[in-house]
Length: 426
Image 1 (cartoon, rainbow, N blue to C red):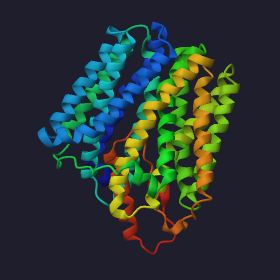
Image 2 (cartoon, rainbow, N blue to C red):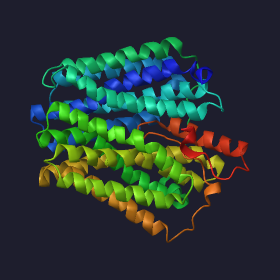
Image 3 (cartoon, one colour):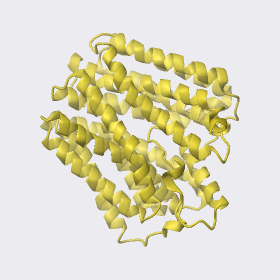
Image 4 (cartoon, rainbow, N blue to C red):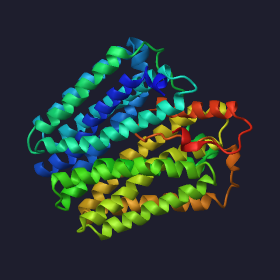
């Protein structure tokens, strides 16, 4: 184990620090936006802007890396992101925050592409599954830990934005001082949405809808908390519980998905998500019950992303998986842009409960479409499915492709094994 991580621990440490800064800024947007008097609709545009930038970064970062190399791109994007975080309290206008969020989304996407390329290059076929799992854990722990750092200052002052900027700035030290050069980032051309839908309708539609859910939970949960009168500490705890649920439920959902029809698991976790959204809408005044609802809603969201990726790969030829990964990441990004906009409109129209309404209806739509697809296509035997690998929705195409390639290599190495090890490796 020590040998496997000896070459990648600086990368994992850097990612942890980056996520501390990025996780702080996601919650700060909702807290500071409420203090500045921004409406839910205005903050929804600010939230969507991040994912617009993220989608653009996924497209153009590989081009920049081929021109000037990983190190220069990584350092430049990190500098821009650090500066952008400090600029938020200086430019407290919705239009300015929208521009800054596009910039930060673009930078984070490029940072992910660079870091994941290094990580993928530094791991062997034998260790790649464990390294990917450690990478996802480092990301999640960073986001959860970021909520604790919010207690170090007041959202009404620039202090917390400065701390977030510092976290991002120092994160590049261990990465840039230890990472070895890698070939230019090469990602397969994304599969067209029409072909992707033809190959795996449930995966395509499910990923699109889940993009909306994930963006709403990460970007609008703090807005919801502010609107119902939660303190800054309570808002931070609510966001931390959302991601804590994902960390706890990832393994059991992955384990189950490798042993029964994945559509049944997709259906079940979507119904669970919708059900706990209904609970969240009903218990807004009870903070403890609200945390329970957040735990299970967030807990099924991240595993559902990896589950839909694995299900899509079940129906693809090996050579099509990289292109499909790019198509799915793009589809997820489209949903992530639209989800917060719908939620902002709903929250302005019917109040804070609109947050739970949009997320719950979207979960229900995934469940209904999964139920419909079960009537249209026979299930794949469990021993013929691809291995479930924990992949976070926030990762770039590089990590998604690496996960797909690793599961293929695993299947080729163990062709006679009944059932796959699933989340055991992740």
